[in-house]
Image (tube, rainbow, N blue to C red; front, side, top):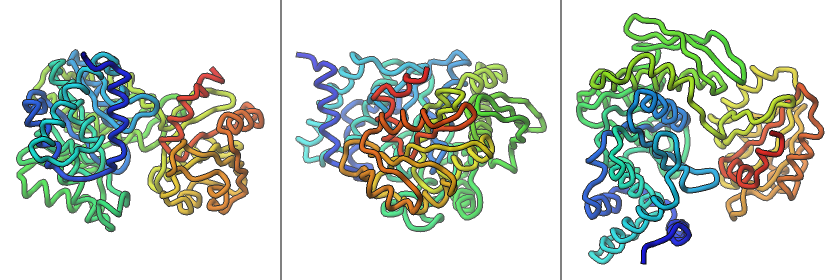
Length: 431
């Protein structure tokens, strides 16, 4: 009897207990038993501390606008696992999810019967993504790294272009305790002779340059080989001048924040690299794809007057981006936060970066897992005048009720919190 969606979901969720286990042996074993679906498709590989998902979304929209059947694999999801695998912007159907789960589960069982180690949930999902895209015969699959790069399960692909957005300190217990060490992990996606596009700076850029040179790769650096100049910016839309190969193009995007200009420029340069081999990827397709790009949970404006913003930033670099955007768009407005984080994150540093003394903060539990910090403890760790609230919906409605038409309500602190919020349907309350 064929596996149905409920059974597939139960199987995938059950794999969460195996945690994170970086390494290539298990995904290589699965890929072999599946007939190496990752070798049957053209791919684009993206890593970096922040901006991976946005760049993936930009590129996916560009390729779809060019008339190319485009898969996109990202993580994590907000509400449904289906969000992680899309085809021309549409989530994998429940029937297809169940089908690829069943096939990969059989491969897992065969791998383990031969003495292989139990694959992790992310490895199984990655194998499912490769299989799904191969079955659908996509023209391109845009693949986002889960963690790091070198030992990430997505790193069995040989892409058309490799992208490294930026490198800051993250996952130091697994990736290394210095920028250089983490950059070495990110640079692990660089393959022999494959072009590389990056917006990295400083020590991270040095590592990427050395790796690209050692592997005889063309390297395109933001600020040297291509550029972006801000022209106009609001929460609803931004324009910037993109410069490359002596040409200047005005680009409109609908993702907020100065960082999205950098991400947009990186995506455009990668699209230009792809266009060198694919005439369908025209300048018009690039501009249309950029303008049509959406990316939920990152400076996502779901209501205006008051403005209600969802942002999953959960590390110092991510909340620095959020704080800069809030200062740019709401310099004098009252800011009311509904804030939840995982307990193992750097709450104190995030707090120091994100909040002004005048801000109102309601702390909530990001999700139902044990990792999520309890509202009372989170409020104590913030060293601010924070008010713990046991109920997310109540905290949100209280924040909205206190906000004037020119104020901002920000739900932030964790991608898991944004997922909980969306799962409860709270993003529909104000629309």
